Length: 193
Image 1 (cartoon, helix red, strand yellow):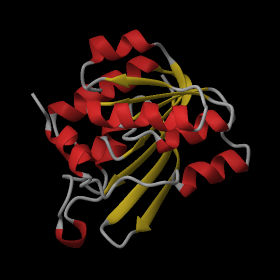
Image 2: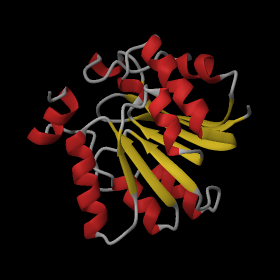
Image 3: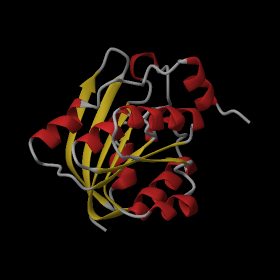
Image 4: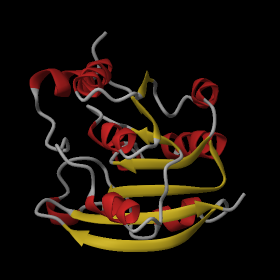
């Protein structure tokens, strides 16, 4: 059965896809704040960021719920001749996610804010806590709920991320980014437990 994400990638209705990784990530790497390590991109889409990270010397892994996106990601990595590992997994399935091992860095450019508030986000956090090592870094980009008309993913409330992640993460940096579509929050966190 085809899911909504597969349909989006089949039809090309993926305005979130980009040919370049997020500037916040590239700046952290260029400044040597984030160094090559084992990294997972949660909701990697067609793999742009995963391929970039592999090119920068990271052991780069990506996962996505969309079979179509993962197929495109594998083709992209092959065409760029970089080694990446991709998984077609629902990140809310902690028992499956734990099988891919632990990581020093996890990034999410739009998965978390697409989940419905409540149990889906708790499941996501359980999976993140399972695979991210203590002292591991976590980068999260998420739209603010109801900003600029509220179209698109559900987004997050103003302090939702802080409240949900506070027991296991410390926020190193938070930026508010005003995009043409919606207000975007960027978080740079470290796992403390």
